[in-house]
Image (cartoon, rainbow, N blue to C red; front, side, top):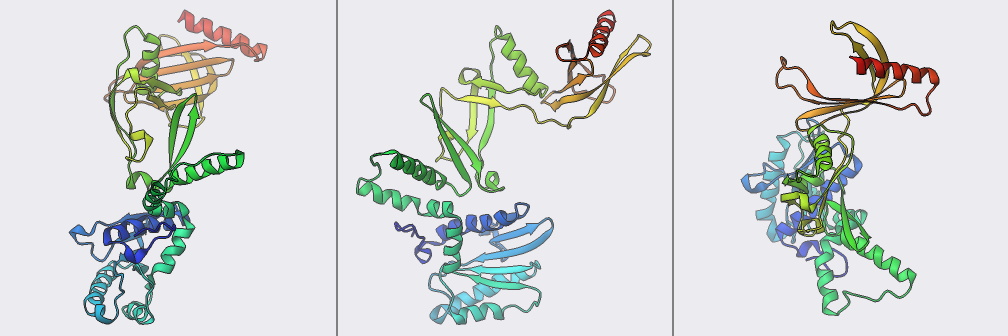
Length: 382
């Protein structure tokens, strides 16, 4: 069981808990060294084919881990039943041609057990190893948040029994240490997410950040669905919501709980995000630009598509929403152009939308201001 002394008693766990502690440890080990790796934990209920965890880079299988909860080892009286299990798992794994295979057990191996594992290897290019308690403890020390997560519940129970789950904050140093300890405990709630905390005007705000690239896959967090209802008399907010959601404009949209209906949010039970709140706010950040800053040309044409004037400029934003897109550009001469258009349903459809044309003369040369004035007159005339 996890110990109150802050150590994991690997050989006193049960098999599901052993797996649950080892899996994030191996995941973190590889993704810390190379975030581009894919680390998959295999559910063995349907037959794992000799794999509990595999590590891949692209199509290449780099490493296979086999977890065996053998707290007594696999020597002596346990050899007859357990060595064949290991051999079957190894033989199945070798057929997949990994570069490395590792057996993980909850205790340190004996010399005989180590020799038996290496005797299985008939493939000269395959690296084979065995990981026991010492190596697991070393990895836990390398990732202390995982150690705190694994030992968190027994420690809390022990503190409650002796009434030390709350303590006085006498002095600035103790206050700072208490905050650091609370942050450490908060990070220990999950092997996948760390939480940032702020308290603004009495309002508690929790922000989750992934500890590794597969955090969302291991422990999903996010908005599943909702309805947004904006009263008809709040035209300005409705227009902003339409620009951000429908057209992907580059502004932040913040909606308070009065506009949010039927909200379904997926969050872990340990997180504040899982609690319903009447004061919840939905903040939708600006749409990610589809293109970086690129040159554009603004043309003024007559009824016969003859170019009357042409002005060079650069895009300031090009984003896409659920039903359309936004193009914003700055044209030489202090001209700002914004175009919101619906995405055509077929190649035959023409682009349709709204177009705004504004100008500013402050801080630009007089020659460009004259061009801007002329462009404004041409557009107004046309």
